[in-house]
Image (cartoon, rainbow, N blue to C red; front, side, top):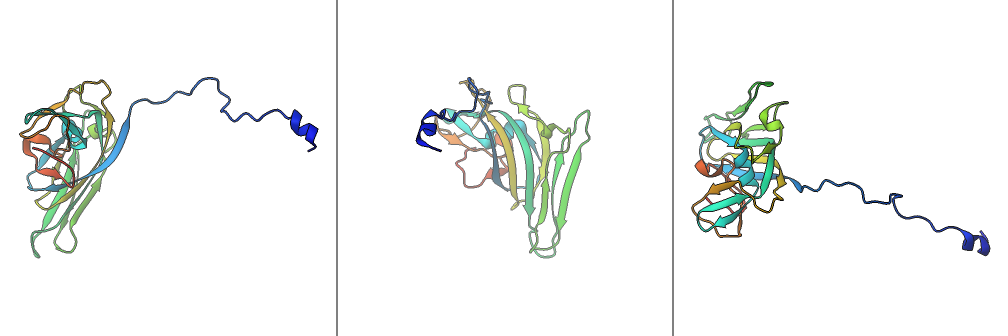
Length: 205
């Protein structure tokens, strides 16, 4: 290309060709895997509020109240490892997903007799079960499933949540210790029983 042709060449358009910015989804959506340890083999309910507080809460009243950071939550996956107490003993872990009108309740479990190989369950919500849908915390607290995980079990919960952007998060839990403005990660079974406590995260009861 000669010099005159280069001078007459139109500048390349580096834009997208659109005059207006594209649409975006403005809600902040986060998916994270949280780890918990079990202190009891009692079968314990997991609720939408429990998942929300496990995902993060902020102190709002000194030594009294925390508010969830999320406005909606979804429990995507549960994974449990349960060792027997001693060789010759058995150990069982299980997850029972709550059904609704269009789906039945489904339970998944595993049992081990070896101290070298823990009982192991990895499960996702069945289609059309309550846990397969987003739960709006403003609507109410919903029981999603029940876990059986004897003491010493490790529980991984993958939780998706939409951060509250109303400026006034209203889903609240009572705790014994809290500092205003400090972030806490509560037990997966929330503040009523706190059997499943978080690993390596700042927590309170």
